[in-house]
Length: 369
Ligand SMILES: Cc1ncc(COP(=O)(O)O)c(C=O)c1O
Image 1 (tube, rainbow, N blue to C red):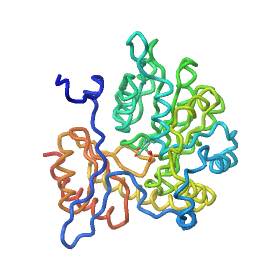
Image 2 (image 1 turned 180 degrees about the horizontal axis):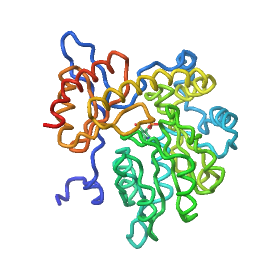
Image 3 (image 1 turned 45 degrees about the vertical axis):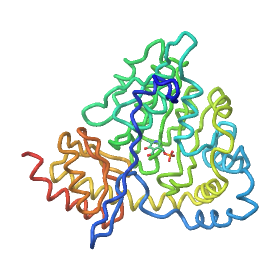
Image 4 (image 1 turned 120 degrees about the vertical axis):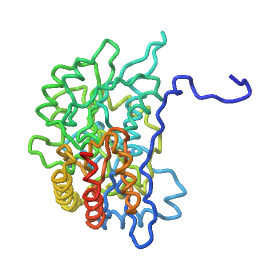
């Protein structure tokens, strides 16, 4: 090592870089569409935009926000009937997730690493967050149908397990774990292991056996439920997410989550959006009906997409993944390739969805070739 250079901690050498969704390639005559980041194609409710505009004043932006985000936490507490102290607000659900891992898992004084069990493939930030905290991610492959292998996750528990991440709907497959399946799972997990349920896409779920997972938080003292304003609320750029978790989790978490994690402009938008939750949920219907149409088209063409409850569809294309993504590029569409596993296509505007179906139709002869 060169003693005159700075180096990241050795354990970070293996860190996979986070690949954010790339912008679509500009193509003359075609409106470009980004279907690569699971964003909401529709604008936030107008009340959220108004709240943001009102929140931007010289006085408000020159001062730090109210650091406990009490007003938003109170509204969340009211809507979901949970104590305000159980709600923690942060910079997106990723900010909360990072805080949770830093609070509960890391490297011990004897050099041993705590283990965090994650489904895989899943949200690609998980390994980065876990390894950055000095802990070890234990990846349990998804079942063949793209769902989390809960039995496999139970079997992966060791004396060193401190935390289990559950992603439902799972990014990138869109598959869910029902509340009853998770209840049966959690009953078998020792009480000293934190279970974080990442429900970033919950508002798009239409399965009767998924509530909002808060029953599980009420039943088990080791469960945290993570939510975000980035997806259904259409406020990804505002960076507001939160967790609902009992005191043994929320109290230490609040110490670790950075002060002033997110802006009052974003929090005002989130508050206004949540105040008009009915409208937000009505908006999700458009995405849900387009999802059904896009999924059906892929399915009819032989792509075998797993059943999705999120605002994206997973195409298990294997070695053809990059080629499919390249074909989308030529039509000014960006999708997310995880070569050589598959491609995740976010549900977008109707025209974008029409176009991706057309690309898939043209590409279909290669599926069996
Ligand atoms: C499963 C999952 N969790 C969390 C996030 C992060 O969302 P946020 O914008 O709230 O940080 C994402 C973003 O894509 C996600 O897919």
